[in-house]
Image (cartoon, rainbow, N blue to C red; front, side, top):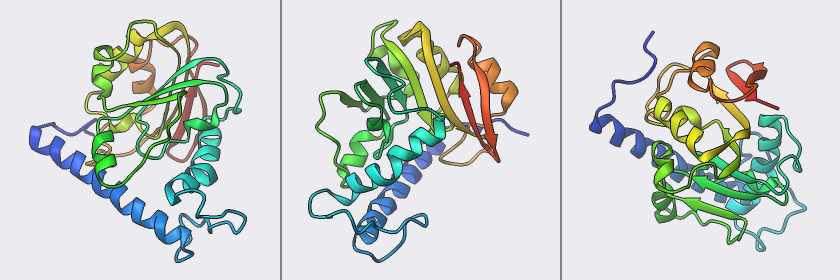
Length: 225
């Protein structure tokens, strides 16, 4: 079985177009959810929230994304206290704000596109977002800069996972904490990277004490703590 798409510029452009299309539809779904028109992913809009105080995007982040991050990585909200976190593939609705008293840097190559279609991002001095490809981290960050690297259902969206791993290795400290929720699947336009246990171990063999924590269906948690 092929381990990825045979990448061409045309396929890459189609991938990014598909990704933006998905999140554009999600932004519309957030509005419908906040108006009580739909239950989004089987979650009704909670009556305890006053939607005029926060945008539907912000409400969804608090109600779904933040608890989802804790569950997806099987960690507590204080686990990265006082640490610098790199989130690979933060997307337009990151739940990384759930980690209290941490400094977070999120990267995603499409951040400017997400802004253009209507997403707005938190004005938080402890959360900085860069429109950056994972394969080009060293163009933005110094070596040995991060204490932690996380990714939630995103690492399979990159264009070149070997290059991504190499770049992460350069910008994190040698004793970094590593936590990723990785999806195993056949190659798809938005998710072109095919992963399995053996390949994850090989690609991230530089991570000290990396091990598989849990696997439920095709969702797998990898951590080194």
